[in-house]
Amino acid sequence: MHRKLRLRKRQDFNRIYRGGRSFANSQLVIYWSRKPEVEHFRMGVSVSKKLGNAVVRNRMRRVLKEIVRHNKDNIVSQIDFILIARMPSVSMTSKELEKSVLHLLRKAKLLQAQPKPATVKN
Image (tube, rainbow, N blue to C red):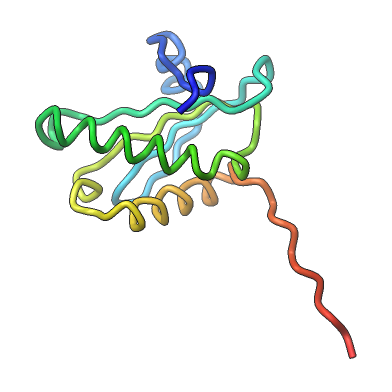
């Protein structure tokens, strides 16, 4: 994931946790808030030690960042968000995780509206 799309500072994480909104499903939690000063979205990932050793946590971070990277054109701009992995996400495949991430983004209304294909009337 590109450096300018990442949240890295503790104060940014705290700002989102305190003043942001959250949505969750059984695998992931998303916290987000508006940030009008930035022209694109920024993302942070949080994976607890409860989920496993460093290898497991780093794999989760890499997979979640890759999922967001693949869908970056569909995510609205001028927001900061944090994805938090929960225990069931460790045993999921990348495809299942992607469905879960997209579900959360849709639930939080952070996905841009996709143009509907035109229907032909007879």
